[in-house]
Image (cartoon, rainbow, N blue to C red):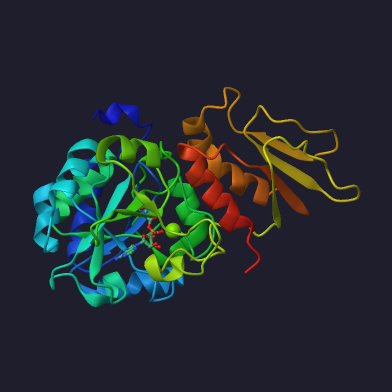
Length: 330
Ligand code: TXA
Ligand code: MG
């Protein structure tokens, strides 16, 4: 992985300083390939508590622990089955999170009391260098106030968390743009808890069929499986209405309307602002631009944002999940 792929790379001193802050129990915001994370030493319950405080995040919503190598992962989980090894060999470093039985080294506050811990090795060179230098497992949710749109640039982190976090590493815009896929390996059958940057098809091509948690219909049962999967999440302040792919988007007369569309879908005149995510309908480009586009529409003083659904495959599954939660009313 070449750092030159990324537009920004912090000064080595800044990364060393951030690693020192993590070890001292402070919070550090850092880039990953998916979204920016708000990190704390996962073995320090007080440091982890500060994440919940700064984000305004409910304590029942567990955190993902980020590690530098698979050997580091094996130090915090009590089992690392062959299936995990196969997935690690294929997708790490990268946007796949595995839930595995935890060891007592990881405090309960990280997992919200659950027996499993969510682990991943991110692919961003700044994240990897930070983890290497910190020499600790780093718990990190997305670096945004709870429930709001996830940050894909350092500026988004500043906009959302302001002065609450004094160390923000800038690694440029995130290239994947949606959060990691969360796959539970706590039972004999793998369960997809959250669709994300690695598609279900890519996972199934490697390990065969995976079961989907019931994330399609909001909270319900999935709230127990993946406590963080609340129905309303990733949400702009402006009301968001999601329409089918084949449907022509119509502006509402008398209202300032915005449109978020993949680019190939149809719309009629009358929108105040249109964000066309990818002329080529490439879902990777759509994902990389998704949260930033939602933010720009949200700050355009609109009455309503209308969004076209994405195809229900590949990264489209993750994007539709984010759209569904962003448009949920509770
Ligand atoms: O891409 C990502 O995953 C980003 C970057 C920063 O790595 N992180 C992220 O974290 O999206 P967060 O906190 O916004 O979402 C983590 C979700 C939780 O809401 C929950 O659904 C699931 O991962 N999760 C975490 N720990 C879990 C556990 N022990 N058991 C089941 N689900 C868990
Ligand atoms: Mg989040």
